[in-house]
Length: 140
Image (tube, rainbow, N blue to C red; front, side, top):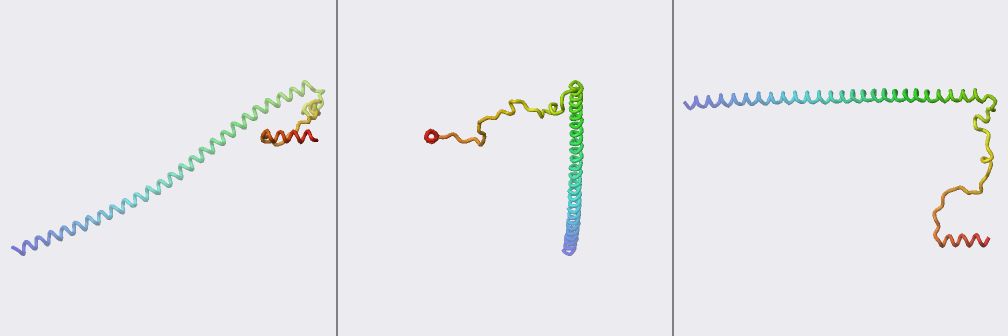
């Protein structure tokens, strides 16, 4: 009977060791599978981020092109109206010399000179410095 119990114990130990080894192998395979999934997810997120940035750049370029196009149209509308205005003015004033139309002729007010000095602004002087400056001017 002791031999039978020993054999049963050996069989149980061997079966449990085999089971433990197969569980360890299974866990190792599961771990490798999770690593593969994680690396795939990382690659996919990198690709999707690159695609998102590319899509955003295309949208921004299209918005910029549309904005520039609209501004160009607006400018053409404004300046075409201005050109029409200038053409009408030339039709109504055919005898006016070209120099006066461009504003080249100056009036008498433009030829008047002033004695005002221009330059960098100076800091306010203290009362002692002002008195000293007045005395210098008076002594001249």
